[in-house]
Image 1 (cartoon, rainbow, N blue to C red):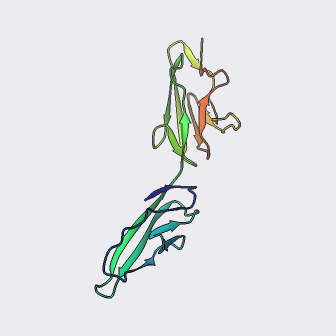
Image 2 (image 1 turned 30 degrees about the vertical axis):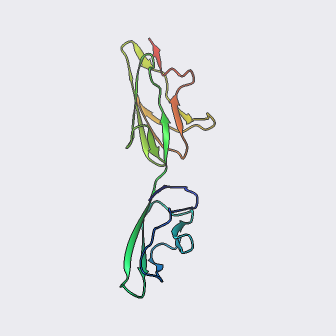
Length: 167
């Protein structure tokens, strides 16, 4: 099972458990925030696990056969945020370099490369939250800018939504 960082409390689908009764299932190892719900026959996962991989071992037993172990693996992935970049911009192109196209994790360094067409020059690059309420600090050298991805979706543009001016 895979969850994304910041998930809310959740549960697995119920496990189907068969065998000679009485059959007992217990959690024999794993993180304390992942618990076995014997009534619902599922694992309940409390909110708050950090990014990582978690193994939980369940052991089923009855009076007839030896213990049977099952290992459940939960992965909590880092949350990613979207990058809106201008397309079909008159006067040049914009390329954003991230580990995964059009998304980045909080804290990831994002590089923006503006390539003006002949006869144009870069006016400016602005990085703001999608809703326009927050600016993101950028460091620019020539036509290349970098910034640290914040914990929100962003848009890249300038005030006029036109990155280039003709000269």
